[in-house]
Length: 324
Image (tube, rainbow, N blue to C red; front, side, top):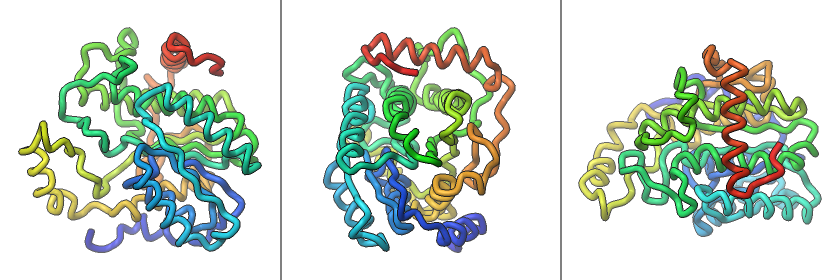
């Protein structure tokens, strides 16, 4: 990236003035890319950070960076919880581990940032490969990008309610799709690209619904925006030519895209000072923190209710009860 975009420069200056020394945040997908950059930046502002991800070694390196950047490393806490976020049973266990950690440390959760899967996946499943189902017989992307977020938020709501100014930021594709088929909410017969395209609208609906149900917590859906990503194509065994092409073209394809550390400024700004950027919870935001007007379809009470009830029924059918 040549030069720093004006919006990044502005947000960086604003964020530098924020003191997060009394805050504890959960970064879901915090072992790489945007999530790791957000975790390290927030730690640099004094926050205690717990990251969730699959790879312990990657998480260890992020936590080392968090400690090194923290102005309050003796008092702040930095922890990692490992787990596969595409598996709902793992997500349920992660939620229990988060609750145990908070009880032990006598803290709540002031902010949650979800970035897992927003620029691809490290598990070898790619956006361009054939549709893949998890061991729980759920579409991989639908589980990773939507169901796991919904379930984890539901499970940790009591911890968020302990904070006086809790905030949940979902990073994916805010306002990117106008509508979907309400008679096929399971996305039956859809390929990876169609499924991923639709999931942004599910997160829009979840964000709006949660904001309506929980007035004491701020909920936002933030567009991921351009960023120099980790390569989406990582399965060099099954897709060697495509993987080689991605590695070769990346320097040119992303020459004008911000680095993860730069893109993280918007995530951090919305997380630590949500009212500075928007005036209401439930907002859909661009990567520049500009409000994205929700479509008439997603604002419909019928649409919101049907998506919410479908999700609740699907999770309950799989044994995840007690959801609000």
